[in-house]
Length: 142
Length: 394
Image (cartoon, rainbow over all chains, first blue to last red):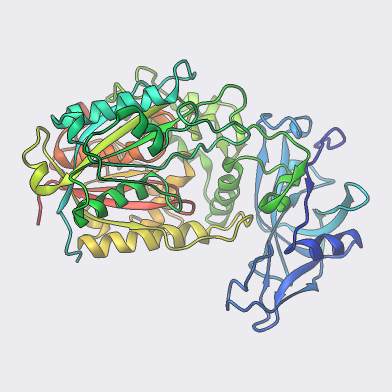
């Protein structure tokens, strides 16, 4: 299993578009930007709805369950911050509640060989410091 | 069809030596390539009156110093002091293919007569994607914390999606790497000229970012290539046979920053660019005699073949088997070796090869009876452009 204990993850810097996402994650909740005109969820946050160009966007809670949409297993140790964890699985998750809104993360608590397209995953929250908590993923039977 | 088809041509082409380390400043490589292209056309430097490039350094975490790690239009102007210069530009939303398209437009507008386009690529010392720092700002805040570093991983996630959705295996990609390396042995300018690659080498190579092994990734090099473009009437009076530009396109779709993994973005990017190229030229994929498709990472060829319409979605790795992409196959592909053979010089070398094949100047790797020569000059999603060059104006 990948050893994440010596990894120094770069810490997200929230901005005008992304602050509500990180505020929710700090409360161990998943909230994504949703268009109030057409109901479309999107991630990462953007200035406009990527479906209908509305600027009326709000963050709304979604359930933290979905499937692995895509993944890669990292072997290269060029990025020294992550070198101690190789090989590790970086995954892209599509949430049940937000089709098309793709969230990057790591597959935690499982061998990297368990990462497969279509596997069910659920969110777990990994605090980085007092301000930032990362939504991460583990295999699920839901 | 495009009213300006075959009114502009690529004439001369030039290369610098491609080296692994940056022993001399990049400006010297760019100068060597530009001089080579001008000489190949039989022109004098003072004939050149248009300059265009895309100078970006794709390596992160390295200083961008003009003349050392990039070669901007300003740098080239300062070196050449062209007495008759009338036009220049640098492009942003497209890679080097956009510079070729802008030079085409400038020639058609009559604001220059002989335009030079170059692409110079630096190989910084140390790690190519140098990712220091403990913060992830902007779009990287949703990818960087999870170990998504360079562009290779961004393309690798789309590749696993493609493989597993289509029940395919990465083993089939060995055919691309091995065939392109075979083509490379006909290209003395290429970094891997003189270094063959076997299927065994491919399967024994170390994994970089699954599904990409070492030979799925182009090797970073220091080098430059250049072309001379001019109106067809002028090109006919120059030394080399012209490669007539029958049509071009650029990708019209873009993913919001930080969104990764989506396969449809590659497909929409590639098909939007190709559609313009097919419509403007009047050709279809079936008419193509030889193709160059950008291969900075091998999977880019999959997205290209499928989104440009050479085969159906999910079939590209089967399409490239059984000799189809050999020099005497049904669709000879990346006949100069591709980026996997030449080293990382981005898409201008693909454009050069497309032109050489159309003008019958490809030497021992010349494909027989070429008229329609297709080029996809960048990964379809990011900065994709497409071109068709022909031998016979129509």
